[in-house]
Amino acid sequence: MTTTKERRPAIDGWFNERDGGVRLLGTRCASCGTPYFPRNELACRNPRCDGPRDGSELAEYAFSARGRIWSYADSRYKPPPPYVSPDPFRPYTVAAVELEDERMVVLGQVVPECTVDDLAVGMEVELTEGVLYEDDDAEYTVWMWRPVK
Image (cartoon, rainbow, N blue to C red; front, side, top):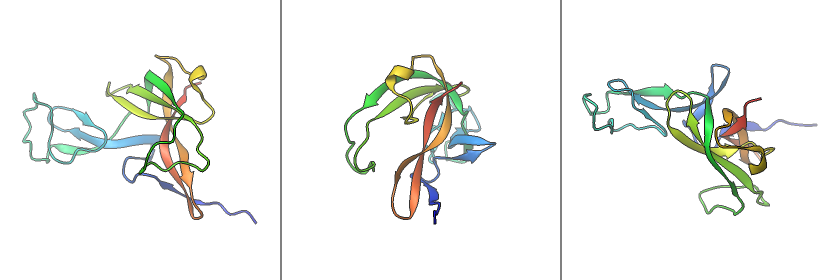
């Protein structure tokens, strides 16, 4: 008998499935439009913002799901805790991606089937969900970048 493990986000509240795809979740200033990822709950940090600066100007925001690779690299060493990696450790690729709408750069893993040989600066990528690690009870997921076909 095969059982399917529950899928849980490795970091609660940073991303979810939304509008038929994976979206990063953060906040955006209602006064000046400055986006924040991860979430900013304190106050807008934009020095040009004329908002109230008491946190009331910040609202939940779902980021665009596409962008272009700004930089990328192999990660061939096991990161230290609190990072949890599979055992045995498997190298992976990371990409810094400039989001399409927000024009800010977000770092994330690339889907396991892609290596640095498959990527290029300026390549269009989209968000997806992938498994970071698993235990006996669940698969723990993170956002990952995948090239747009």
